[in-house]
Length: 165
Image 1 (cartoon, helix red, strand yellow):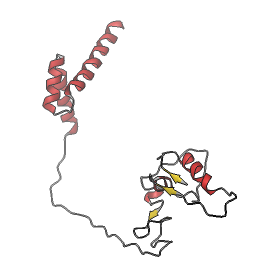
Image 2 (cartoon, helix red, strand yellow):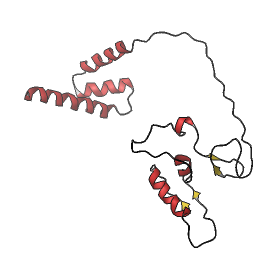
Image 3 (cartoon, one colour):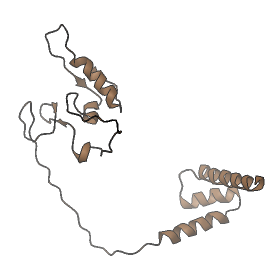
Image 4 (cartoon, helix red, strand yellow):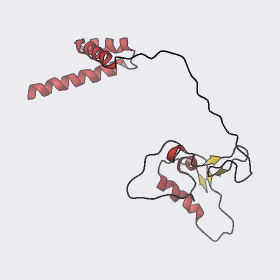
């Protein structure tokens, strides 16, 4: 069975792969080919899963507790559950060492609230839309016109709300 459509849905993935795992009149085993990384995202279809009605637990990008869900052999390209060696060809994976870089430096306290207050005051002093666009350019925003239009629209809505109250 060939899988060529990526999905974020575990249920959809298991349903597609389950079709290839059903018994049929053929004596030949089915081959599941994943061309889009669904096995890496959701794990192998025969993997043990804990089902619950409580909702999906939060996981990291590599799966539960930061562990890989499947491993791809560098030699024979077989996908299998995480192990120190490939279950198909026996290739032993090299152990990757980790090192921490230390950099000498001085720690200093930052006044984030003071900077934010100054930025808000600077923004409040801009009285026209053109002033806001110029402020956006000065701050290096990617789209100063869009930012200024957003701020201007919010100001107008706030003024209209005050007048109607």
